[in-house]
Image (cartoon, rainbow, N blue to C red):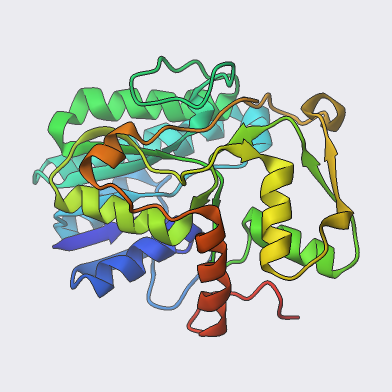
Length: 301
């Protein structure tokens, strides 16, 4: 298998590259703004050049975990949100389809309104934010145009070792270590998803020849404060500085789905047991950092 990972410097992209190499695949990763050793710079917003580069690679599968994922930023700049999250991946998906390559797009539970979650693949989306709307538009365009060549993976609250050290777990550990309070939305509920498991499950689904829409998330559905407390415990930090406030009190820039999260009905029927529990995932998180093999340690200075 020859695989391209667009956004290889991100947390899902980084684990996809490692998982692909460990599986014996030939993998090439790209970055847009954050250089990483071994990655190729690619500006997906230059659609003509990006298309030419992808044609030259002749991949069997293209993974696209990249995009503009800052939810409040998307609300402020909907043109950029739709360009980054829909137009640019759709451009490369069309190129991939020229040689019947599979295109794997990563989406979010923000395509739902959060009134009756958690949701399975058959539930009707209703996004509240520009970010969710852009992701849903991309989902529908890719599935409509590419058919069996498209695989859309929805995930949520991804955490775990990563090279940039930006996800929620890193922010929490650094904040608590500094003795500062961490304020979390107490009424936002979703499915924490361990990055290495998301990548491993995604590759397994691709290798099984699956297409369409699938949810890949961890088995728990819980609120952000409980998630934060679990991370603090795993890193031997006191949860006393974790404070909960309602979404209304936080006055975030974009509306959030409150009762979100995803059910893994299809994943469980195809590849059961691939997503570890929160407790086991956090233990693996700590163990992985001890190996010092490229993942940023949130406990380091």
